Image 1 (tube, helix red, strand yellow):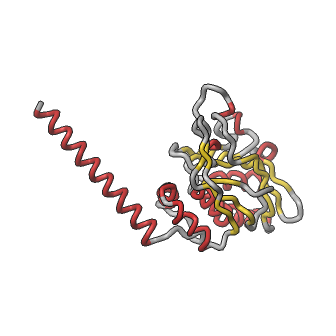
Image 2 (cartoon, rainbow, N blue to C red; image 1 turned 90 degrees about the vertical axis):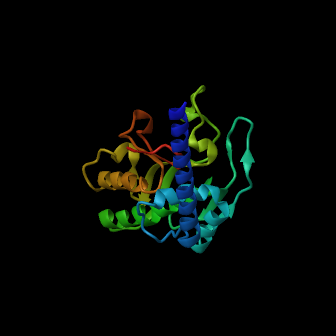
Image 3 (cartoon, rainbow, N blue to C red; image 1 turned 90 degrees about the horizontal axis):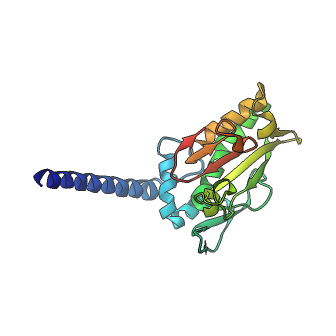
Length: 229
């Protein structure tokens, strides 16, 4: 009995310490050092983005400070669990995403940070050209993982994910995940650097190295599961 009480006290102390750390981290990152799209990623970036899930107004303020052309979207909730509360629609960016994509605000910040700090400079480095567009396969769709019944909902069901099939360089040259992933030249190196760079912002980054289901695209999501492959 004494041991149980002691263990309960220890776990309660750990819980209080963790709660205090989380609260302090949230206060510091959200209030003292607001998210800046121009700031290169560091070890706190993903933690900061996760905290902004609880601070939609501060998240959208980060988009406004960066002068992003976006539009808040009315919340959507479905009986089967799909939906979002802090959705934003991207109206325009330096890269053409093939339409006005819809994502939760922190996922949009992650995507635009990846664009600025990874995709744009790597395109210049490897090809000496501007990146014009991405071939994206979708963001919000109410479905389970892999579209298979009986499985848990995909992060796409929460507007928390985007799939990227390839890129188009200035002048029209295309880079395809399906076709160029194993390329030994610049296209293959660009794709792998794009994957590795996405891991600084997204919770899960899945590529053809993960499994056959991702042979033709990069899956990027802001879920709690951490994986970079």
